Image (cartoon, rainbow, N blue to C red):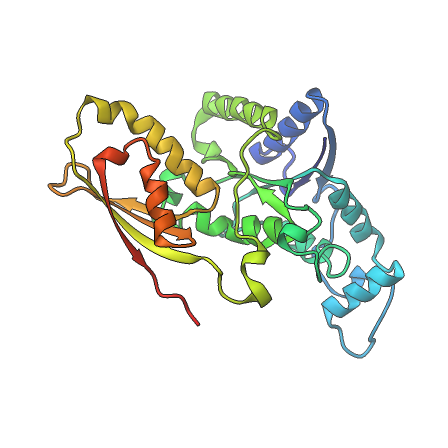
Length: 322
């Protein structure tokens, strides 16, 4: 398989760079074909303007999408942009490698997206979401380092939750262009975990690269569910789950299988939000927001859970905007 790694760190001896190089080496050892775009080494220009093009549609007003479509029709992209486009078009999987800066990608990688993901050539018309150049089957992976630890980005920390910060990449870049995202690989706070901790992160990266084309992809809503870019054809349901039997030995035996199925719901796009009360609460509850056709479908899902006999559900259909 062909893999494109787009790497964005200015220091070749950084741990971020070590991760990117390790990913490349491991993928090559597994027989994959790897293209490595080291944006700083390439001195890639992140500024998106007329330098993107060798052709001109309107010299008096720069409307980027119009110029991109014109360049698509007239073989008019600058050489640095054209080179990256060809790499992306050939890839079966794309990996964005970067340190988390200001809750997002470094400017050089954002500039790569601004210039390379061009209307007409990469997206537009039928080439969106499941119809994009990724075809709904190619893979997208974030390979990232952070300054703060995992708890900082876990939803209860001072920073926004990681999944919220990843939305512009996972949904706005990967899925928008038809690449199905994988769970990101995050090396948490490598500057503060010592040599042994960093070795463990590199070993874990090896395992992720081994499973790159076997992992279950995340499912995001297809464009087909939003006719004319309107609201979702499916509904949203708030579910309150209560426990109606004691937490006996059988309950605890079934918990791992329950967690696995709930995670599958998250991966296949059914489960949008999940939280729960303290389990030693006199009335422990779980709260979920689910995306489904109707309440009967939701009830059917809960009936399939390993702990179904222990649960009672209250399903409320949420208001859909007109």
